[in-house]
Image (cartoon, rainbow, N blue to C red; front, side, top):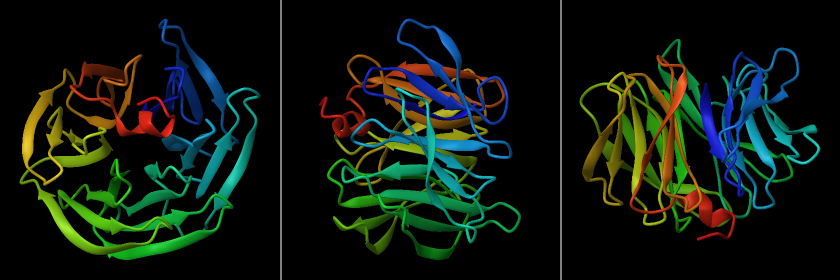
Length: 260
C-alpha cells in the first residue's frame, strides 16, 4: 500500500489495497474494503482531494491523473501526459491546481509537472534528482519537493497561479531515502525516511525537530486525518500495513476542507 489520503469524513484511502490497481478505504470505525478498481493496466500512487471532495489518483503506469466521485465511485480522466516518466506523488492547492513529482528511477533523475483543473499539463522543471514527495505549504506560498536518492528537499516560491521560482535547498539528509511528504497547518514538514523507519519533522526553516520511530523500516507515504486532523497515517511497505501516531497540530490538508 502507498499514497494514503483522508477525506473530510475521516475515511482513509490507500492505493494497492490487497492487490495492485485498487484503491482501498478504511472507515473511522475500522471497516476496511476495496473501494474501487482502476482500469486494467493502471496502478495508483499518490491520492489527494479537491476542495469539493473529489479524489485525485496519480496513475504511474498509465501516465494519468484520475478523478473519482466518492458518491458514485465513477472514474473520469483529469489529465494524461505521455511525456511523463510517471506521475508519482501529487499535492494540491486550494484552487485545485495539482503538482506531480515525476521520477525516473533508472537514471536517478526527475521532473515536476503542474496540472490545472481543466486538465492542462505543464512541465515546470526537469533535470532534477529522483523527485518523489511533494507538498504545498499552508500559506500556499511555497512548494516542497524532495529527491529520494539525493536525500534533498527543495523549496520553491509558489504563486497563486501555480508558477514556481527562487529554488532553494530546504534540508539535506546524510543517509537513507526520502518518500512521501506532508505539512501541518503551522508549516512543519513531515517526511518519511525510507529504510530508516522514521518520519522526520522539519520546521518551516528546515530545522530537524524530531523523528518519530515506526515499527516498520520502509515507510513510504504520510497523511493527516482523524476527527481533529492530528492523526498521522503512514504506509509501510515492508510491513504491508498502515501505522499511525499523534501530531501536535492538524494537517494542512484539513484546511482545504474548511475544517481548521
